[in-house]
Length: 456
Image (cartoon, rainbow, N blue to C red; front, side, top):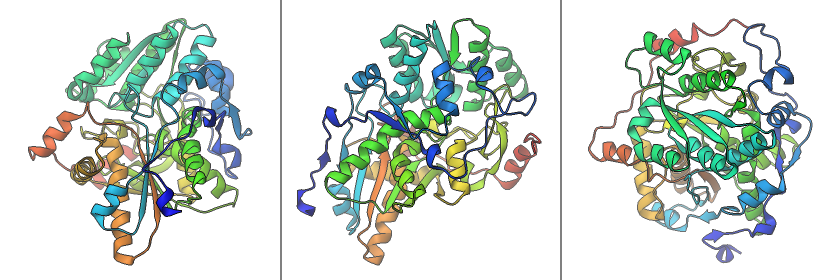
């Protein structure tokens, strides 16, 4: 059986998932509800519909239905780049000399270069169905902004993107791809919004954060009739759409009777991690199987490993709903590390609850070690990985090396969320020895924790 497993396991388009899987339906302890920032009471569907599309609100609040049908028009779009391959990393295994079996789910085979298109096309579809003019959003490294601009172009929607300033400057070509697809791209914080001007006044010269960009995008959406705000991570609806990653991964493994021991994903807000682990976590929640699930985050923005499990604002401007999550504080502005997609101050409330309840674990890793793993992987497996994905690669290699020491032939699966071809400034800094490993001190974090809202 071992010799029959190919380098790449492909499903055909008839095996594309027909429904998204909703982990919350199988959670005995549900994620805490979003709260109105003014009243601190659970938000109603009516209140949320002023920010999000109506169908997305229903998905956001749905904790009962395990399966949500995928509209045919979205499935037809998925067929342009899905199902994506599950790759057996034979070359990496040989180089490491490990008895471990390593697989990775590759999500970079589309123009956006990442998994983000899985949710972008769904959110654009529901905006179009609702008859909206356009949407606004934030983006960190730019993968989400790129994906959403593609999706909006497909449906003829206007797309306004607020891009974290440090990434706007580090990744000009990703910005230009967004503009190719018709999006307007503004570096955040900016002087185009009230909240942006306030943040600039309080933090002159700041490189921004996802929390800042979210505030600006929400302000613009709520101030312009016919627009809604869409988000690329964190929210329940996004994890739902991304479940296609894990559903395909499990279907491919099941074809060859392979059961993973360890599942690893990089974690910023939670979109790719939640998507990858979804069906496996479902089995774990239902008591049908057990897996070791590992979230990997940057040491410079360690929400899981050093954050507080508390209600907090999802944005720096404190205009968004409050979510109970592992957070570093909405005012925390991380160092300008090169994994821009992992620089959010908080974590998905669904994943936060699962982590809090012991269904998964988390580790943080330094930036230079991540890029060492990225380069090792690129030289052996032939794919230049995104900095975000390389966090998962780092820990997958570490776990494979542990297997070499113990002689255990564990099966490791990790998510390769996308490619790093627009991240060459980061690779340049690494090669030139100019990359640093900034880690916030306890005092830095405490100053941010002190600003957490007082919610009982």
